[in-house]
Length: 128
Image (cartoon, rainbow, N blue to C red):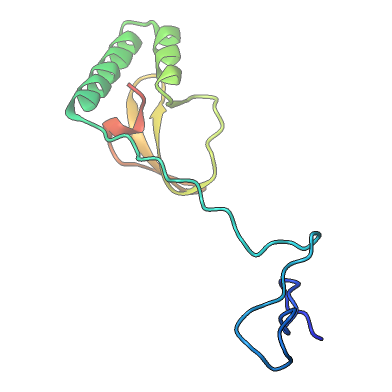
């Protein structure tokens, strides 16, 4: 009697030879063919106008602190917002967007492998 990849006998137990349609019951040690369901996808939180307004306000605050000479406070705020700052290692990504603070201006960049392209500030690139 042959066994398939799910450890089921091809001749059902208790039925006459040649009768088709069911499989023999699984043995206790066999791996089941039942796969647990995938976890439900969580709905992504949508971004609203208020979020964008807060992001623009935070950008203005960071840049004004840098203009006033308080670069350490500006850098701390930029890090809290999730921006990459001078001295941080830039991730190797393919088509990813990230916020970048160069000590003077907060902007959004597109990272394509080793290439970085400035795409102007996009409020969704920071946490505000």
